[in-house]
Amino acid sequence: EAGERYAACGKIILLGEHAVVYGRPAIALPIPLAVEAMVRREGQGINIVIPRWGLEQPVHANTQGLSGILAKILKDLDLDRENMTIEVFPHIPRAMGLGGSSALAVAILRALDAQFDLGMDNSRINELAYECEKAAHGTPSGVDNTVATYGTPLRYQQVDGKPIFRDLRLTEPLQLVVGITGRESLTADTVAQVRNAWTQHPDRYNSIFDQIGSLTEAAEQALEQGKLGDLGDLMNLCHGYLNALQLSTPELEELIHIARANGALGAKLTGGGGGGSMIALCPDNPDAVAQAMQAAGYETLSVTVG
Ligand code: MEV
Image 1 (cartoon, protein in one colour):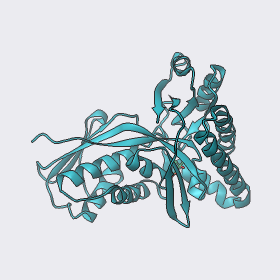
Image 2 (tube, rainbow, N blue to C red):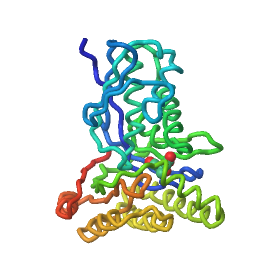
Image 3 (cartoon, rainbow, N blue to C red):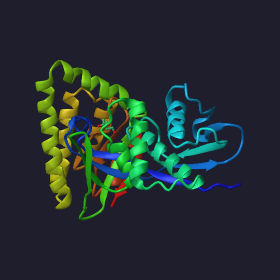
Image 4 (cartoon, rainbow, N blue to C red):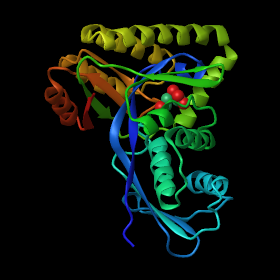
């Protein structure tokens, strides 16, 4: 039987990554149609297939990674004794800081919801996707799964361990170029690296998180007032702090340099860092910036938000 595909968004963190894990705010933007998933009731047991990654494997409770996480979710949903094939179509590169893992979870949950008439609303889907994120990387803030689910520009913060988020109103569409280093990076690793440093010198690192938090608050205003020059400055400053957290790499620095030299208003790493991707704010010249990055051998993604 031909199944239907269900989609979820990826994400770009505009400002606030890492600090958001410690209760400071973050601003996140959706990348539409990042992942699609389809569930068919067929075959023996439960299998997951991701043609683009050449992945095809049974879903088992005592396995690591995606299969193990899925097994847990299917058990929670009381679907673990069904026969089905879960097929996933990612349209963004994995492990590049663009929210692929959350998008994957949300798309699969939506496909399961439709196929088995589970009646889940976005809030339930978001909750379950957060559980997947926790299984994948320990102490996530919940920003990735929230954008993957709701697909709107958000201000996100954890207050007393509870997610508080609201839609941001943009005065005009935001033109961003994503520069992709090609160096895969696991958020679990960079989050653990920052936690390790914070544990040893909490005061030192808390003050950096405070600084990132106040840049993020200022960026929220700049965004809602359409002050893009200001927003660009705030992005540049934020990258300085992310660099202080040792999250940058030579490739990220090169891409950021190219973006600024070609007239981007601001540029910074985005997401977990340690590889992955960077973003450049380019209201007037996205093509020139993207071409300069490509000429240096990098893949790019042009995203218009709002
Ligand atoms: C990853 O997209 C964003 C981080 O702040 C981790 C998180 O919020 O869970 C690095």
